[in-house]
Length: 386
Ligand SMILES: [Fe+2]
View (cartoon, rainbow, N blue to C red):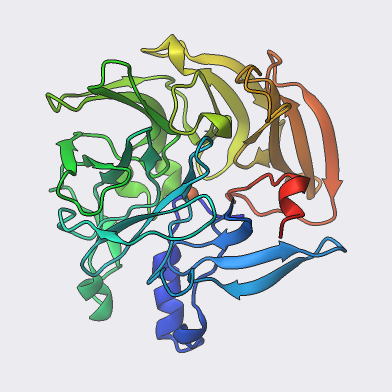
């Protein structure tokens, strides 16, 4: 499910203003992504509570309802929560146009929500669609897309817009912080990301590495996505000196980057990302080796879907998810691909280890899956817990 650089908040507020819905009954589209944690499956849209859903015996999706975690989730939930593969804790946040503009929180392995940590050092409302997690930190961004609710209320412009006066920042808060007193912000000029891919801490204890597609020409992201270029970068942050160093991994236009979920928050080697040509259409997928480091040598495999065929976000599924000795790329890449010539949609399964991301299975679907949705693979054993 879902959509690229989402404008959920904007579209929802417009819809609500038109009086079509009673916001008390929920107003989110719940169509940005899915998450499975605490033995529940959620449909997520970042402007509302999560919607609990389940798979019925005949394969339909049943909506169980908005879920507020026993009254502890006091507002919306990001569509990109991060699940620690070792602790099974889920880390998340919400953002919005009124103070506190950012609120951080987490859930334990059973899905119990811990208290909110309001982040008042986020001094202006900012578009904050995704974040990153390391062993000890949650990492937030403060990009040059800001929010101005007054403009929308007085019909003088859009809620969100480009702010050329801002210098993008990265904010580090300890995972289990009870308040923001230990949060540190570092200027990261020129680094505007919508989706993070992964982050980890190096052994020296001072260095954090983050992998994310940097949105170049971000001023066009809300209206002319075809003009932007998303470049996957390796960003190195020295927590002691505050120095932020950026290196491109690939010069291609790449978004919707994913990894083997077992490596969330840990040093990893492989990234799979969709090829924008131009965004928001994706003509294929690449496999990057981010350990090749610095500069443009990172592409190790490519799959182009063919003329008139466009895919979505890839998703990596390990062949042996319970085998700690399994190689990081020993698994499958999944994606939906739509053929605009025939109007047919296929579900593709690719061998993530093969040099050409070989297609090992293709299933024709009875209906089209719209472009730009995030996806989730849920194991049968997890579905049975619902
Ligand atoms: Fe997203």
